[in-house]
Image 1 (cartoon, helix red, strand yellow):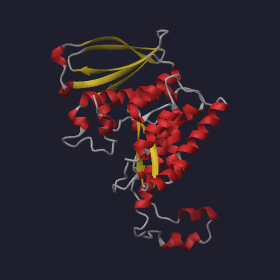
Image 2 (cartoon, helix red, strand yellow):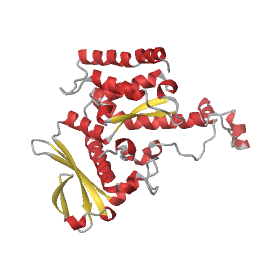
Image 3 (cartoon, rainbow, N blue to C red):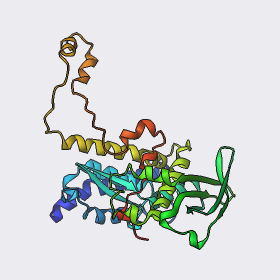
Image 4 (cartoon, rainbow, N blue to C red):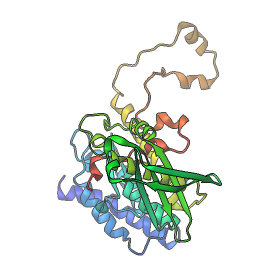
Length: 314
């Protein structure tokens, strides 16, 4: 893109979002932490966006709609996140740009919203002494004693994450390795490949998965209707919708085969108007992303798998 074209896109996206955020602040609808500058975050995002490409290696700023670019920037800023701190990244689905939190970002939002002082995850290895109790429907770790000889990526049996508050309150989620691997299977990034990040760093990835699970589970219990919570809870749905839209667009020029039985076709003329909506034949293809799991995933845990290489800097 030329300098002039970039300036036009910036005017219609970054500048629009900056004004929108200013209005939110004036109306008291959003409050940022003292160490967060929305202006600096958008500057970082704009520089990053100039390097983002779609799957065909075309610049996102050329292929994505201005509305989706603006919405992804707004989503980032409202949650108080900055891509320069590895708190999220921009992903292209067809002509739609989305902002997706990293596990760093999920922890940052959780701390900001809940006032948590710390979020810690640990791996449970075979032969570790591990015990927990359940008090008023909440898990509490009562004992975890490990040994240096137990540390082995091939002997991980589980992981847990605890969110701590200064008043002594705690919230813990525990996952078996079987549950963690089941969560990984939902990833589109090939976790079962020989050299995948999941297989190269199973302990680190297990921690990230259980951290995402704990933060999302706790945040989903909140009845907070603030702007930041709306954006936090809406992310999974927005990404799933973007994936589905991209798949539909990709196959839009494919041949549609009419599999409507003749009897049904005869009946269609006398059916109520709502029957017209079923004209397009159903297929057995499941939508990409996590939307296919929605029926069995009321808490949106299908997205617990943290995106990989973009945040694998230990």
